[in-house]
Image (tube, rainbow, N blue to C red):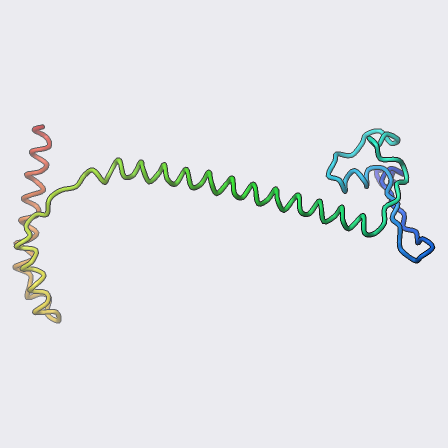
Length: 155
């Protein structure tokens, strides 16, 4: 059951008078090499006569042609996927920019920020000495944040 092969799926190799091999393809083997679906009818081969003889060079040429067609399909599919991904990425960037880039503010407490920076440069090995400057800067930033929040609620 299922172990027998049909005569439509065979190939035969013979040698011509000059010693070159000749490959005879029958039935669905020739159709599969061309990338066509297998025929359900055993004797109908859509223009391919039963027992068609092909030389090794012809078989290799067909194989190379099929490989090139599949390679081109892969390249085309990859290019199409890359284009789609690039468009999706560009759309996502625009969406993120629309949400976040517009929210720009002016720098706050620059004088205190500069004091913290200078203190850290002077005491780069003793950063705890800058705690008063950091505390003053943190409080100023928090005050500005509260003011911005209150003014946004009033608008």
